[in-house]
Image (cartoon, rainbow, N blue to C red):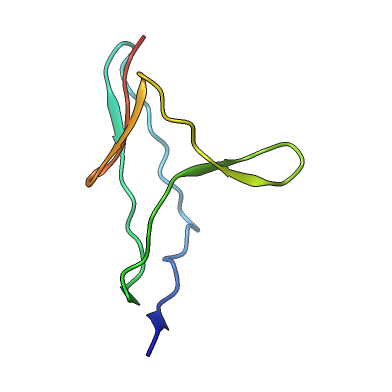
Length: 71
């Protein structure tokens, strides 16, 4: 048996306004699923492709979300 609920609607997107030089953590609230799904962050390219976000010394992933570190 496989179950996948829908992602919550983003009709009211959250706008983040981090302080300059401060880290920012973005969190994901995935839908319920069985078996548990794999979550990854991505970005849409100009040609419409969704590509995984490239991890760097400034961009990191952990269980709580994606961390963006200042320069």
